[in-house]
Length: 509
Ligand code: FAD
Ligand code: SF4
Image 1 (cartoon, rainbow, N blue to C red):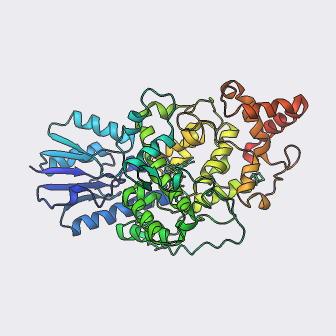
Image 2 (image 1 turned 30 degrees about the vertical axis):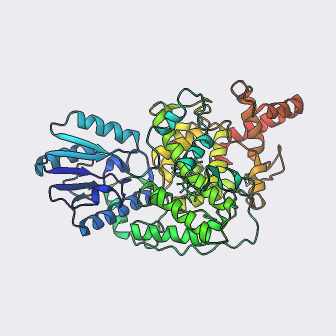
Image 3 (image 1 turned 90 degrees about the horizontal axis):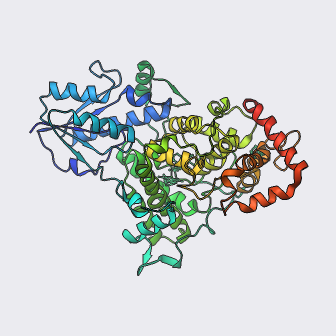
């Protein structure tokens, strides 16, 4: 039966069972489409990176003997819309059956479901064979409970896959080594060279420019750093495990001037496009831990937690809570995103470093996303819709299932406490503690009010004051309100008017 198999841009799973055997009746279809470049404004590296990875995957499929129809962005027959493209091929290729893999984005899931309901030929849906948990595993684990605890799910996953386990107990006796991990940046620490295997993406870049797709951000087309094919991703994984994993946990939360990547893995693009599987990533990391003595239990536990814990958990939350999740706005925040989120032109050094780095690399590490750009946005009361568009557009790894749960959930508490037990907000103290951004800032970190006072300090108390009714009963926050009360009216007024002044002039901070 002549079958058309769709592969979406984030379904580049070289190890999928679809490709085990060659079958002359099967045609694969992969397409660069304006429906995918235009749903938000994207960083140029994100568009180019996905197209480059899709093209490399197509080359591989063809080399393996599979038949592939690939639509480039400017191809004449490309309608730029998924349903129209498929219908056209069903007709021209005399297709009798349509098959696709479960999309990871709700919008595509709905689009394909609705499309198939109207199809006059047979269709079948397959798993992507990528994740370690099913779409609904998180929902089933927490059914009937008000809160979803990552730690509970993580422990379940450790047991299920017997990872770092010793006779049913966590290796080393503890589930969590955060105490040993998450140290501040230490001046003078040397970071190994990244030794990127650069790609030349000049041709794709000019095609994207010609297409008229609206993008932003920087790109050096002859030195594109992100792995776009399987062997590059494997090498990137190997380099991370060899050179960066030993210090991963320790500096996981550090912030350092002019150091965009620290000891992070930079594997999120290869993982989210499915070029690498989470299973192989953790297996390689655990193998190294077993055979080398420079990787501590804390370092490996910290890394495994991110992949089998946070990553799988966020996907589960997404499928448990969509489509309502994308409209959640617990604090009713409605302020527009400051203009400098698109340029990095702000005097606040922490934000300048995090945003300029994001524009340059289409990447920021977790603490820049959570405790700098996310923290500021929450303190300033930015509309989560605006913020979602920004995070979804700017990062090379941003796909809605993992972007929105991190943004609305972990970072903005817009879900009212599904992902986190309390909002991740901090004054300048945390940013100052974790690195050297404040030393290089034109604002004074220790000043709370008055000229040059760090905006985080007054915005922090303004946030708590403003949301007293929603947060006062949260037991994890009660102490903050006691401190606020003890300050007395005069001091409180000083903080609040300083915050109002900054909010009024937010575009000039
Ligand atoms: P590392 O620090 O090396 O971590 C290793 C891997 O663990 C990552 O590649 C990732 O797959 C996984 N991981 C770590 N933390 C998380 C997390 N909180 N949720 C899910 N997976 C995690 N991650 C994305 O992949 N796409 C996004 O669009 C995205 N948006 C985010 C938005 C905000 C506001 C925040 C706070 C976090 C976001 N994250 C997102 C999570 C995290 O910041 C990135 O996964 C990480 O920075 C990617 O860089 P890395 O590969 O060097 O990660
Ligand atoms: Fe950021 Fe304030 Fe520190 Fe400046 S002083 S880097 S604005 S936290």
